[in-house]
Length: 361
Image 1 (spheres, rainbow, N blue to C red):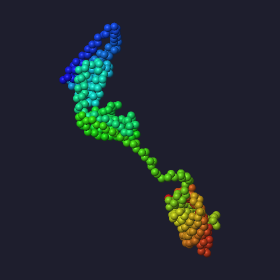
Image 2 (image 1 turned 45 degrees about the vertical axis):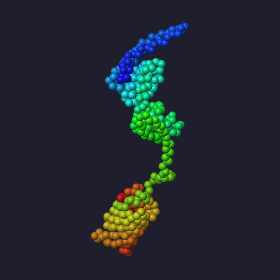
Image 3 (image 1 turned 60 degrees about the vertical axis):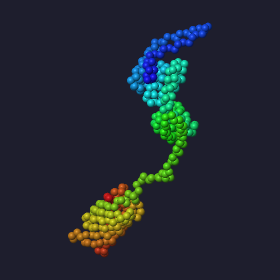
């Protein structure tokens, strides 16, 4: 193959071009200065990579050969190395890169590379162009042209030249501009096609309006003090203990008492007290008149005295009076009440008074 023959020739350092005849009367050109030691070392390194690339190319290891040729060109650029780089890209079907390397070789090699070698490179370039498609991409609106990032089949292009060189088949072209939706288009091309494609960048999306919620409320002033009604309402049942006496005979009377109570609503309460020593039971009805933590209530009761052998008799009285209840907490209360109890003629009128504590549930 011609390319292998040329590569074999390139494996040996090319001979310097013959100098043109010196016209009479003009001084001879000065000899080039000898290379510095570090330059000679760089040249030897470039030759080593170049020869390694030639050997790899002969073994059809084109990707490895390409890496060696590119390193040789970085160290010591020479147009002939560009020809070898173009040949590797052609074998790897990197047609766009091959076309770029061939064109650069043809531009840089004029005047320094033999004409027959340039003609061979042009023929190989023409053969590639005959089997690929050339696609020119324009961006709309034009002012975004300099800010667009173009990609083909998902691979970003770094400073792409136009037209794009694409192999036959289907390809996805994508143009991306920051802040805009992507513009995409899929094209299907055949060998030798020339196509112009416009990618229109969409307008940036309109900002979403802020969510509409309920109108803000003024901050409510919260009373941190306990709400008595809310606290008392759940407490429906109480047990209590106290001490009672007849105020008319306070020096001679007095007895402990036990009681229970049931609240009906927030103002009415039914109670039952038992006097232990006097052996009496007192069903009662209490109605809260005013107040909450410290409340005044009216009392209606029916004291009923039980017999205690020969010391007392059974009788009932009717009573009414007032009471005070102090509730420092929803569960604890102190109660003081007194009322007038009217019995029959034999037992007369008494004024019972009670002081005690309650535990509410």
